[in-house]
Image 1: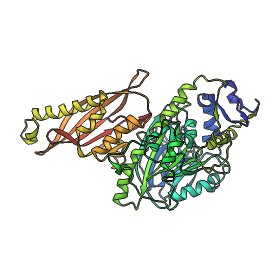
Image 2: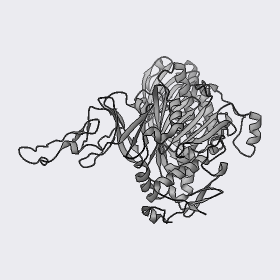
Image 3: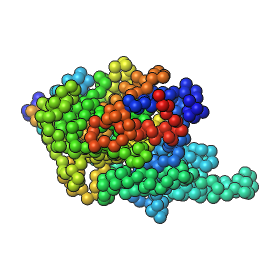
Image 4: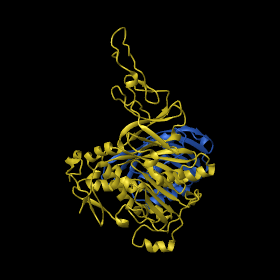
Length: 424
Length: 165
């Protein structure tokens, strides 16, 4: 038990047993405020790169966006020289939020409390009454503007995705992501993109339940009946589940049209989820174009800890996970197309956008799945989940009947939190 | 009324009555869970959209729900009845401040406010979605929505949105 960090001691020191028959995760990890606080420090402010936005959200100098890394508020800015900056959204004076708008354009960032003003790189520019008024007040002689800027984070970009880190020791972004993720991002972000809009979904569950969900091809055709019903995704399709060498990131992909409808009837005979009797009255919903030469029609790329990049048919989106306490998170979906999309392609993307997001035919259930776990594990002290489909080890699979990437996620999680699993 | 209804010859009171009557029947159809009838409030070439204000205000096209035809609306209902998984719930719409903003002989542009309370199985009624309807109403034997945009202020959707607004 010594492996449990001291600040987790009040949580009754849950055990993390490992055994040959699969992976077990103590349910307290989804409900414990101590775990949550530890994650904010050891993961979101630890040696990782967190997604904060897309460069095309900030096309012009002065553009800013306020967002979160974990639950810490940050501001993403485009400075006068075209650089992207990520700053903590907390005034160096008395700690107030400096940026109170979700997005906008400004010459500088000014705290409303006492009008301390910062440039777009976070450098403090001016302080009202710095020299006092008629000889009264004023800041001390030793006060130096340069010592009181907004805290700036490390920033790196990859093909228009902006990542930031609190860590001074984390490896460069490309090394952190690894070649699997880098190649997947280069494939989807192969040319300039245009944002089609955002969607925000509030889920009453722990953020890690969503991290599991997006690394889980097992559930996709069983929970999301629309997938199956209309052949968008079936576990019998050609696909794979791959991880980077650290097992923290996951690529799931599938190719539609690679399964046999008749054989699928046998595959799904024990489930409620294959009903091919339904047809669309307006099939233009699913009419699309083959956009990629590799034939891959579904990509779910989970980038540890807070990003999912997706291609489902012709819908393209990034999903930004924002934890809000142990029992809730916000999921921000930013849908995009390519800047060179013709009008027809944009119509296709907008119709297919019905598939994803909080009202999406193949996505809405994920919020529900997270919540029914959260509600059930509230007092499951000493109990564990059991993750074994596909063998229960963090290994790549050339198929979609696996939970192996979830195991990989928990390995990374335990490493960052300093938890050693117990052999049983 | 219907066959010979001409918006421009109606009195303001009559027009207001016809519009409010349509809106009332529409929201009762949803709140009474008679969703199979919902597409019948729309023209075949309708546009029905439930879109976040943060997108509408930026002229971004992405909607939470986007139906570009009556058929797509029918498919929404089929999916929620037979494919999608969600907690059983009921809506209660409150519509107010119905304002006719423009008319031609055959169409009326109408703006109204709405709030939707959602009650799930735990019995708690929560304000789920607040916004404004921007409707284009036409006459085709009866009053129908040619376009219905629900622009919601509640940018953050709680859990999921499956039942039309």
